[in-house]
Image (cartoon, rainbow, N blue to C red; front, side, top):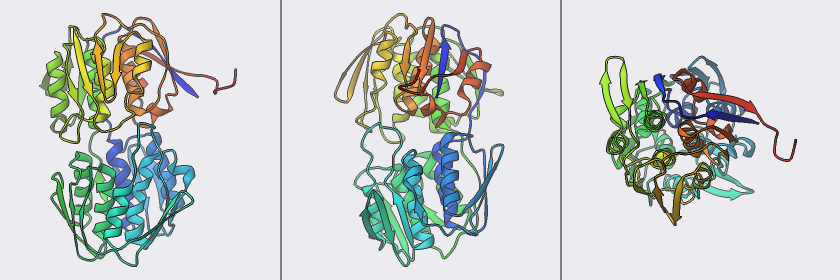
Length: 423
């Protein structure tokens, strides 16, 4: 098991290139199951979750191989119907195979999903939508078994905004007979990226990026050939890294058009932004000003950057309030930040962060993907060494983060540590 050892107190100075978005690449890989033939995805990040999705596609008969940042997925012989527990338990995005399998194969057996332990994330909206399209669904032994001779277009009003639910239903509707209308749909850029890839493959989709998406079903889709959008969460994380270390980073391929809420809050905190021919220059020279924050569905402030901003606020020159509205357990990083010297009090879904002058290195443990990033950011600003264990979470969502930070002047190294219970 790996850990990261970070020696803090060094301003980051240098260039960082943003990788393709994990949350866009995974549904695009699942969407290949809608096609028959050779699909190509480019700008794919080299992440643990991407490799897990590749193994899932293998079990379904879709041959896939990777060359640098490209994945080639041949679905000509993909006849499998089951997404097994062993794979789905490690990655919630595996449930995205459900819609394509029912639409393309007429049957799916998919384990109930796992992933980060940040709160309850049921798939009832996925199932509700598929049932509206004529799917017979049975839950047996921890698996969703879904069957339909051919899906039929339907009007689906989601009870809450769900990104993976919207993606699953859009993919299923592409091969349904008739027209489907998905109301209260997620508006996230990753949903739009998926829809554009499907449109290029022959799907008839309108309204992507709005709360109502209309899909007119077709008989078949051509193989996908698509470049994955840049990762807005990774970009936001490195923006915070520049601010918390009071450094200057030139960030290339940052999808600024999708980061207005994040940039707005960072500017409010005193972080400076300048667009140049070489990239976006993000810098800071002083302790951050206090910023109050409420997470929300896009275009609101993303819950996936809440922990990172809290790390920045740990050093603010006053008091900040952070309210989490998406996941009920997304403050698990708070006890670990306190180990570094942060002054944070949590009441329900609200955290009050009283700024301190200095964080100090300690041994901490990552609890989920974004909490991992939060601890790395805090460690970069802390005095002394911070040992961050369980960084396998980090490897699920950040490509070569230790190398990227090292190239910008951070002192960070990866080391092995014994498994729990062993010396």
